[in-house]
Length: 164
Ligand code: RP5
Image (tube, rainbow, N blue to C red; front, side, top):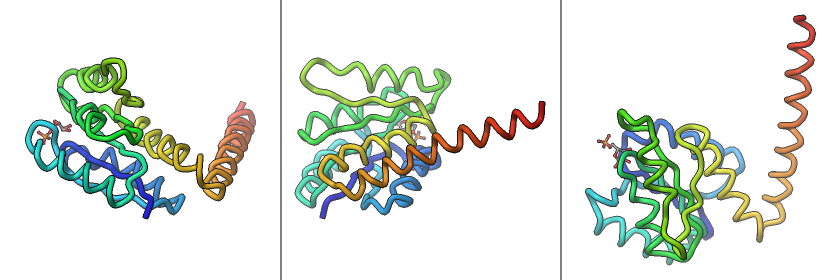
């Protein structure tokens, strides 16, 4: 079973990461979500990544805030693609998590997306684009989605233009 594995550093990250889940569900992509922390539960994180890979995880999404090492730790445990989502969880508004997630040393990539909701949404799209490399049906759905997005820009423009 091929699926997207979503690991969140804390239950408090879920309201934002639910945006990722909603999109995967909309496209009928299999996923699982667990809470596991690089700092608070390192053993659980290590065990889970190994098990998830055996079960068929094709891509990992790791979301964490503050000194966010989760995505980097996951990247150290697998050669599957890892997408890091920096959470805004402190007085630094996610800049701490962004830098912690994006600044990986050479040879250990984490594909880091935007802080917060846009990042959660893009983590789902990027995960699906990776799966779509070997899934023609999903690729077609992603292309159709782009067409709808472009059409929405046009209809939004018409509605604004009509106000002026
Ligand atoms: C990180 O610390 C989590 O990913 C979360 O974004 C942040 C705060 O966690 P809680 O104190 O809310 O559990 O590890």
